[in-house]
Amino acid sequence: MEDLLELNYGYLFEEELINEIKALGAIKHVEAGDRLIDFGDHIKFMPLLLKGAIKISRQDDNGDEILLYFIEKGDTCAMTMTCCLGQKKSEIRATAETEVELIMIPVEKMNEWVVTYKTWRNFVFESYNSRLTEMLEAIDSLAFLNMPERVEKYLRDKVMIVKDTELNVTHQEIAYDLNSSRVVISRILKKLEKEGKIELLRNKIKVLDF
Amino acid sequence: MEDLLELNYGYLFEEELINEIKALGAIKHVEAGDRLIDFGDHIKFMPLLLKGAIKISRQDDNGDEILLYFIEKGDTCAMTMTCCLGQKKSEIRATAETEVELIMIPVEKMNEWVVTYKTWRNFVFESYNSRLTEMLEAIDSLAFLNMPERVEKYLRDKVMIVKDTELNVTHQEIAYDLNSSRVVISRILKKLEKEGKIELLRNKIKVLDF
DNA sequence: GGCCTAATGTAACAAATGTTACGCAAAGAA
DNA sequence: TTCTTTGCGTAACATTTGTTACATTAGGCC
Image 1 (cartoon, rainbow over the protein chains, first blue to last red):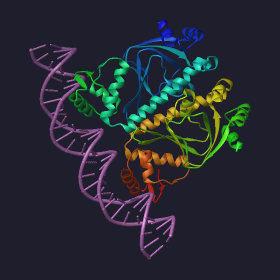
Image 2: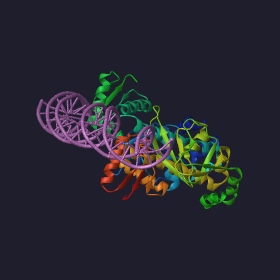
Image 3: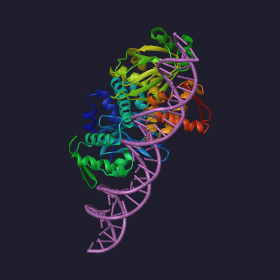
Image 4: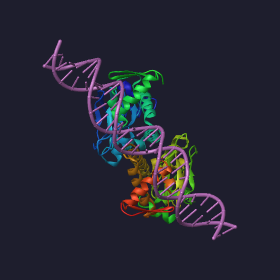
């Protein structure tokens, strides 16, 4: 398992830091679909993703949900860092999109290493930056795209994340992620199929064109 | 002018750091409506806000705009830090919402101080956290609120920022900020007026109720 | 006063999105 | 096999939001 650490972070961190991570971090294995963090959770560890992808989503008071972004191997979740540092409750939900391996770092260390290791400091700032950028992208989608465009973007993003043009997803799930309704999504998907861009199957969408 | 620095940041930073800021920072005065940063700008300074409020907005390829959030005195702009560190171009536009005083810190120092001063480090992380939180709020508004609700929230936020229930704003300006159209906004505002929540004047809206 | 421009009011219509309702088919359970 | 659940297709309709078009009004300027 520790080879994954070397593989994904070895080029980023000096050996000394890698060793510290090995010594203090707890490896965790999560199945696809499992929930890692939920709204209101208190967070005491910062996760480094070794394998797989995690979906980060947000919910309002009525239980309506919206997908924010995905994080992949080599990433960490800035929203988690936020919670760690501020001792606040989680504002987001993290769900394993695929099978996931991660290593959990105690909060205190995260803070300490910012001073001790330049590479760690850069990594932390880079993570914040990536997350801000992805939040901006989410805002762009919501503000400037119409539903059909959002669905297309959703499918594209998902193909990237799972690295497969066959997506195991139902229309209802897409509706949840985009905070829309199943009927609306079905209607749009059917149109995309007629345009030859996708192929619709039960519990599955084959992305052909884009 | 330097009293403003003491006033807004004195309780945050140790004297030594305040002195460094005084020595290295350049004071800048900006009139309401002036543009501080535009899309694609390269950023070499990190601004600390001493007085007033700045509006941060985003634009898509068609020139459509959307308000992201405001920053106030005692804040800095995390998106700017992002740009500084990553040597990237600005993804956002910053416009003075009121008369503004700020102090510009050279990028290199910003990085250096993270190691040297614990209080600075905390400040930087806190800023990232605030910004992420405000981005989340922006996403919530876009994803979960309808237009009338967004308009109400807009008016509420604006009252907070300018600290006055009389807002000098036209319907068209609101339409730009919410990426909607003037007619739609006028319609909603008229309804709010009939409900006794606001009073409409030329170039001005008096917020009564909420 | 008369003229001009920007801001606002409003109706009528169009497009996008959401809702309700119901039928059908696939997959798994009994 | 039959029964049941779940996912999907589709029509009809409702609501929200956007568009076009035009009238009115306030304020600045001559």
